[in-house]
Length: 356
Image (cartoon, rainbow, N blue to C red; front, side):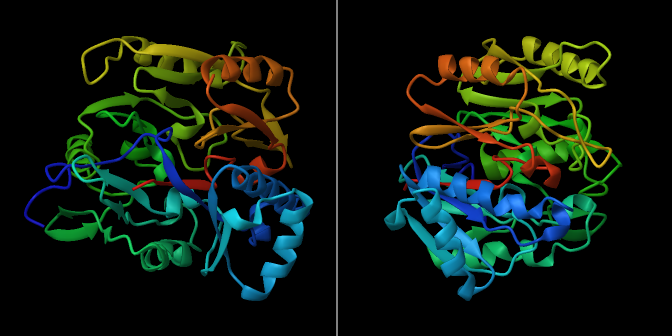
């Protein structure tokens, strides 16, 4: 390709832009929820069913014969049958936000393609090979061309590792990301790759030029700093960000530092952002392990916003904040107290495909 995708008019749309469908993977990996797996299919079926009532869902299953059992689960949640399409694809985990396609759309002609970044299990887990190949199947199903972003480091051309949960865009040229996830030596995705190289790649492929680098993600996030647990665009000029009010909580300092960066940040047009502060839920421990419970792992669809809740005293306050800021969409809460034991919630397990 002689020209960069950005020069050809491609860009990553914001999540709130018109979607054609949502991709979701059915849960199979019991090791991701030790002792709690029996509750996970019920939660996932509720999420699929809620989305299906207003738009199409592409549901990935590993085994064709499971379709009957899964349909039964969906019927219990009153899903819209015509809007759910099943696809048999081998997978390791449900977290398609990170392993799946990052869709692009052309500004000039609405043509779509998607980026096939390498997925390596967050540089932590070894069982990721099936998830790294998921985009081969999605490309064939959708007939959308995939592009493998690559970079030359130390005289070797490598496919770049990047997860969808590590970036968030406003669709106009601004992007949120963290230094902890992309630049840290811990769980290092692309050894030898520097900040300037990341910015060059993200400009060339996603058409973003205004980089808002936050410092760290929340405690308990085993991805090591994903942005979609801490700060999210909800419009081109507005950012929602998690805040911790308890000074003794280890997230207090982390989120306060990020808040200061956001308050000083400017948009691609040089304007200050409108910052909406969202309180954190209590710290949740499962088997003496802190899990990354956060309201920021919400997902925006065409007509609804799926909001994770945790049976917490802040749930009602946060629902009110969301209703105030998403006046054209219905807020649907999903209890994620058990889902979060897999170290992810609603945004982590969904991937939107933009309308053409």
